[in-house]
Image 1 (spheres, helix red, strand yellow):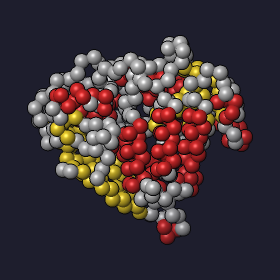
Image 2: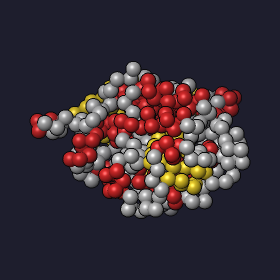
Image 3: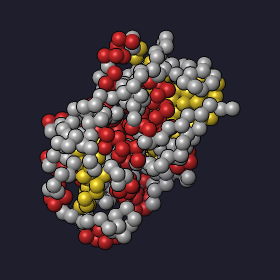
Amino acid sequence: MSASFVISFRSSCSRRTAKPERTKGQFFFARSVRRPHLRRMERRDFISTAGSALAATLAMPRNSGFAQEPDGGKGLIRAGQIGTKHAHASGKMAAMRKFSDTFEVVGIAEPDDARWEAVKGQPSYRGLRRMSEDDLLGTEGLQAVAVETEVRDLVATAMRCLEAGMHVHLDKPAGASMPACRALHAAAAEKTRVIQMGYMLRYNPAFQLCYRAVREGWLGDVFELHTVMSKTSGAGARRQIAEFSGGAMFELGCHIIDSAVYILGRPERVTPFLRRTREGEGDQLADNCLAVFEYPGATATIRSALVEYAGFERRQFTVCGKEGTVDIRPLEPPKMRLALSESRGGFKRGYQDVKLEKSTGRYDGEFLDLAAIIRGEKSPDFDSKHDLAVHETVLRASGMPVD
């Protein structure tokens, strides 16, 4: 019988109080640029940097360090959304409304009248109060805003939210300018507000287990990471994505770059390969992309295309170490195989299928986690240093300027 592992989004927001035992030769990955790659750590080193480790299975401090409401955040979190044009916009609103015992959604700001007429009848938006951005940000007691505009407007909108004192859920990618992204995070730090990036795989149960396997040393020294994130995009979507020269890598590959950097850190070198399958037809979209990340002793390949038939079925994330392999394919709904050189964490030696609990929703985990951060129950699993390293890497992988 294969070993099984069950993880739920709700349980991912509660942290174990005991740290896992470290075995000889174990590796821990870091989630910030302070640890740019996997490295050996003595137990005293781990204790001193526990705040930089993945929080999914570790106890977190009660005080997150972010400003909280006077009532200690025990009531409903007042939240709103700006924009409906991002590809994930309706799903993010649906997630907030789903958790009515956690969030009170006060309204939505969508300045485009034609757009609002087109979407207001969708289940995600039905019955919501439409407001101007100024009215939304001026709502008494508002604490958090999901920014779901077109990509070109994401960072500027998020900055206005921060200036109004809001915590921000910011969809991906964080714009085309690295200096603007740095300024955004600097503003968040100054105002003691959190920016939560909307990379959709972070709380996927297969990825949570993958992070645990790397952190607890099940795989040994990681030497290879191979990922694919592809789909087929129609003419309308292609025109929108073509606004950015990074094409498929910038729009879609950013999701798996987030996880790659989470595991291996900021790469020493990034080599992008951007190809255009329809260039002869006057279509300049980089729709077939590859990036190679180089680390001491390890490499990662990131593939993202917008021309792959049934691409969702072949999306994959594979991490190979000297003592084991995690192989996730497809990513949603996730299927996972695990290979171990010896029994670890309740899993047997050899290759095995891993049983994962069915996800309750793609975005559930991130919004429950955001609520816990706002309430001061935990620190962010993915901090500002990680997010800045990710965005720099996304731009480099997309062949776009960094400064």
